[in-house]
Length: 145
Length: 397
Image 1: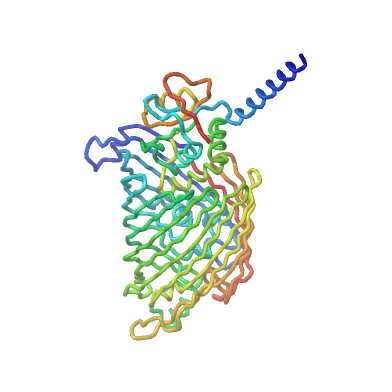
Image 2: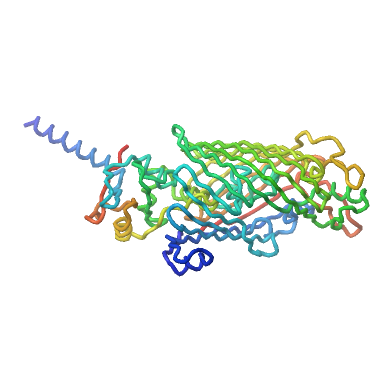
């Protein structure tokens, strides 16, 4: 009996720890066009795409990143997670590229519904939405570390 | 905010000269704005004459508007309009604009009027929001008055280990305008019997010049927290206003590095400039460097900069002849400065900045300009230990 309780306790502790670990990633899911064969992308490649350092998917196809609205919590936590940069630093980074004519920041959309429409309509798009918004119109991909 | 329009009517308006039905994927309008005020503790005007002991808005205030459009996934056009308070009350000029062709992820070719990178931040020099200072250190950045070329460049990109390599060769021609080293030019002018027809003492002289056969290269390696850069350029300069008719060779080279690690922000650069012949009168051989260190604390970024400008083995007189008479070489400008600054983020895309700069000039001039005009006549002054205070708001939109 004692052992059972102890094991139950251990199990629930493990569950809490696991939940805590995935909390770091909020409940954000990276999504691509359903026709895109990609199933995983590394966190590093994702960061490079959203900073304009990579212009292609790792497999070589052209990538068209799509951002949530400037100042939105979704966007801030996404950049913090995959580039380690605050909103102000990201803004400054893109100002340098954009105003020296070396690149334009990702297209911007307001909210998950608009993000899904954008990604669903463009085979080269990549975006991110809340896990609860995922449906058949887009394809989730796993981000690897 | 990044405004994107997929409007074919606008696209057609932009592509009037092009073949009909050019399908423009999207058009971006972006802009930047700086409103800044400055005051110094001397009557002697600094550099272009816009910083004096009267509070003024002319030195730093400016607005820029950028339009870019993708003609197709490989071809794009980008142009920037710039209006500066110090140029005839914000008369907007077409600062630069080009067509770019992305041959591959690794190779982009651009042609048109290009902002070229003499130094680290030269190609976004006007965008105050993109750097910590109100004015990039003048001891380095004022050494090349040329900022754009009509020509072509190549952006060659590669990944080298964990770093991104950029190699950017460029070639073209340029023209520009620079404040003449005034006291000295006045002396030469008077000695030569007003040969150059310069403005009266107390006023600022600008010299128009042309740069031909301008070729250069910019290389940088960028890691996540550190980037290093090296560049060199050379050109043949003509300045008819001061009798420089034969193209005199001008060379620049520079190295620099930036750091953005945890909360530590750093910038440093070193340059040398060498100019032969008569052009040396207005543009003597110089070298200079600066180092900036800052520490980000939430929305605040306090920073400190030391900068120095000095002689770079300027040749002995004369540097040429004009009408058979020998013309002396220019007198190198020498000064150093310490700047204490604070940048404060005003939400997304806006920053408020304060700076206090103490400048120490050598041989009485540094980057100061002009004679002091007094009721009893024009007096040559030797400003030393000058303080300049500045405040600015930078916005990008």
